[in-house]
Image 1 (tube, protein in one colour):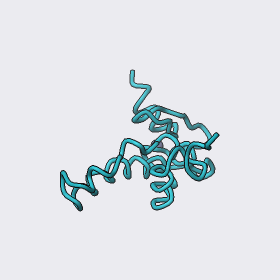
Image 2 (spheres, helix red, strand yellow; image 1 turned 30 degrees about the horizontal axis):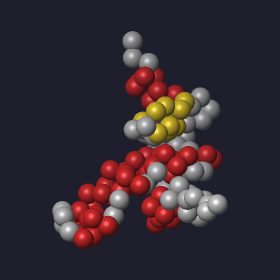
Image 3 (tube, rainbow, N blue to C red; image 1 turned 180 degrees about the vertical axis):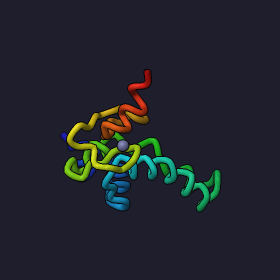
Image 4 (tube, rainbow, N blue to C red; image 1 turned 90 degrees about the horizontal axis):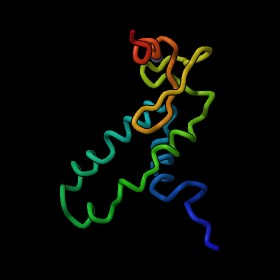
Length: 110
Ligand SMILES: [Zn+2]
């Protein structure tokens, strides 16, 4: 049986994004996710052979976030250290770290 994936990643697209950007925080991953595709279209144009050859939907953003070094985890919202009272919250379908202050501000609204 042929092993699926690429170098231990879901596919080559996901592996490439992690290799080139080597993100440290979930916030960085989110920034790449927001800018990569529009940067690409700014460079090559809207509709041509290059746009037809690339598939941004293949990138597994969740896998990239799941592979971030936990020791370097920072709050997704303010970049501070989420320990010792941090939370995990779902942002754009991905689990990210959130410090106690941001969690209170964003999720514990009375
Ligand atoms: Zn925070």
